[in-house]
Picture (cartoon, rainbow, N blue to C red):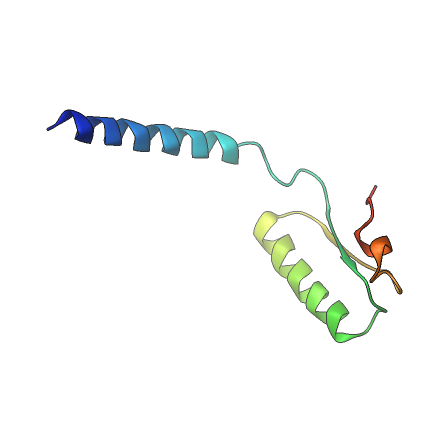
Length: 81
């Protein structure tokens, strides 16, 4: 075994350790909000609802789909509090 092989193995082990510790942070730790910048009932709303269902199943976290009519401008990308 060469020194380069040992160094590569050590680097891979460190990356695995860092990945495991980053995953333990519990993301997401609050409900996920999807803002749809169009009126409710349209195709964008339907797609957001489907995406929200998938995200809720995958992360075991609540997903809120919020329709904001006329939010296609900066209102839709403003701060969400």
